[in-house]
Length: 236
Image (cartoon, rainbow, N blue to C red; front, side, top):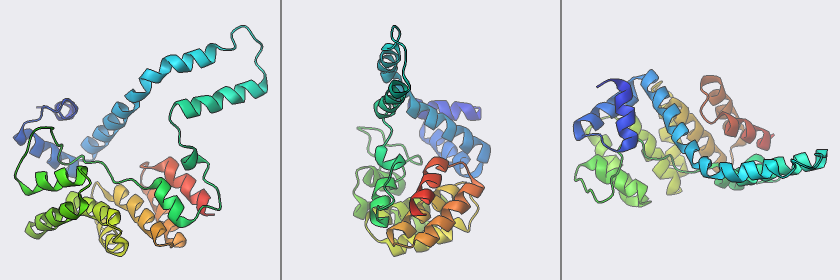
């Protein structure tokens, strides 16, 4: 199977167990494959906007027989931002927002892309159990499984998700230590580790370290570019 075939089957949820292992190997070892996968994943997510296109067109047609004023143009643009799900809190955070409030507005645990969980299917291997708990937000259980996996052998992806889990458990200092170690390893998840490290610093009210880490992320990757740029402005 060619590499694109793995990506197609991933989104169709038809990867066999053997193919899933090969998919995960490619995701961690092949930068081009990972970049293509991330592009396709984000493309899939944008499809949810399609149902709103008709409403968008109706808004744009409101003024077909009336001369547009500058005020109305701005009003429609603002309405579209709301209808398309743009977060006012994300883009218009008040400069007075505390680091804790900013952290809450930007943080969300990274979605599971390592071990897709199929409804109604229950597997007994450690990785499946770990990500079942992670997706179910049973973070205390997930951390135990992640620890067991990492005892067997180092795993960059598992280490990354363990750090996410630690942040969810408010074990921020432990998460920082793990993420700081992760970013020293230039694997394919380095940009993700940098983003969550910046947020962990933010949660600890270390705004200088947050901005420094965000700038490092911007210099290395296009991941979270808009969010990182906006957050730096929020902290200035």
